[in-house]
Image 1: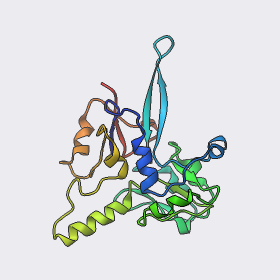
Image 2: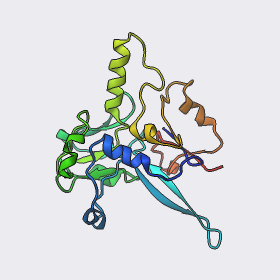
Image 3: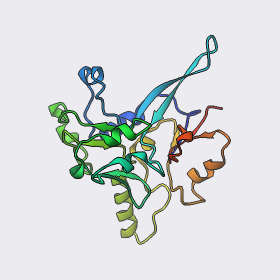
Image 4: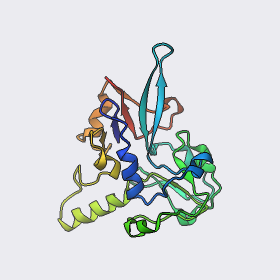
Length: 221
């Protein structure tokens, strides 16, 4: 995934799309006060510079799907792992709720369900049937809308063709009105996201940690 901060307007459409697509419980004031809001995609304010030349920008942060994820190394029951597509996955029925992975993630992109998820009654029919609702006591995270990958693979198989770039995009990218998010196969040297490896505006979050995030940011021009 590539997020171009020069295009991002901070509208948070990506957050809303993620909530809807992945059946995330809606936050309330109590959850905010207790620091227990679940946000697979969050937009954080980042302050730069020193007074009087201080500026603030907004940074969308999904799971970084690290090449060397520290969260998988600490899971005692292998409930979180790197799948064959290179995504960091989470097996909810196997999770024992120890929260080792939550503490190991340097990007704070894993969330523990402190309570059973609840929604207003009229929203029950709006749940996405392709995404399971996580129970109390397990950890959850951004999956890059992995269920969409399965659907794209099945569609390509029915049509007798290989998976093409653009067949599979996560909800956050689809909803971004500024087209600030791009998504593709990093293993494909011809993909748009691979081309951004040479962009001089490219940077990774906390690259010094050596986790090798698969989310690339392009700084503001």
